Image (cartoon, rainbow, N blue to C red; front, side, top):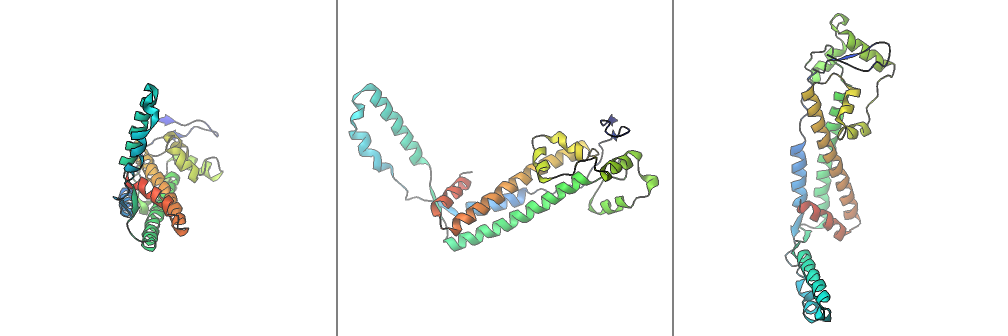
Length: 241
């Protein structure tokens, strides 16, 4: 049995054997949206500009010196590399593209909200005993458990929470747990190792959803302004992923 730091009055034991409900993965929704966005762009097979620099490389007088020849060779290789990158163009008209992105945004926003609420729920859940397996239905039952079945350290932790001696989780805290997973125990010291690992994996998927949601908002703003080149650059980044 581990012992938490003595914050108020007495030490609180940390049993860390609470197995919470499974965090349903958001991977399917993320991949579904990414596949949809990739379908909004197609490779532009007509964007061939290699010939534009042919005369320059052939006729440039810079190659009259050894250093000039070396510079020209590097420039030629650089130009070839840029030319080999496949460019994209919109696969559909703008109105169809906007509708598809709006549908994707709805999927991502709903999934991000679902996972975010579940992460907060896990951080706040305090079991009735130190050897509990929790699910959605059991949380309400926990709140009405007879005091005779509640372990003293659970009562102590709830008392600390009542008098605001435990931190209240925020969005920033969820993000912080991605690189500092040990912070999770400050909000819920009862989670088992497997539950904490599952939570940590859920945080990374939540961050992916946040990034994807922000990207979709930006792309819709670009589409509304008919900024096609900027929109194609974003789609090109997704297409080459």
